[in-house]
Image (cartoon, rainbow, N blue to C red; front, side):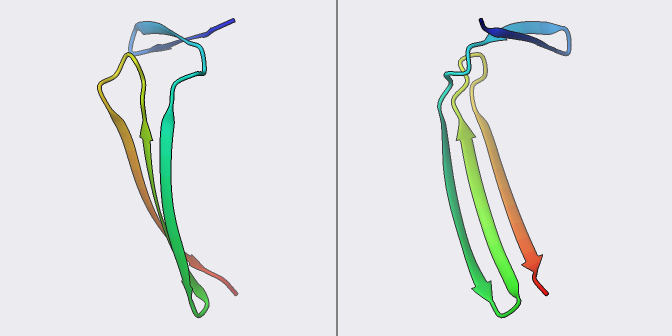
Length: 60
């Protein structure tokens, strides 16, 4: 059964079968870790959805 949700008054159905791509890279430098992730979602109702995140972790 598709899930129905509403955003700003627009209602749409979702089957959970939309594709997405994820690329990530990370490395350690001493006690610091650096990570970058890029996600791109293919959603039928929207032209393009992308997300870029960059993280720095301090490990002790």
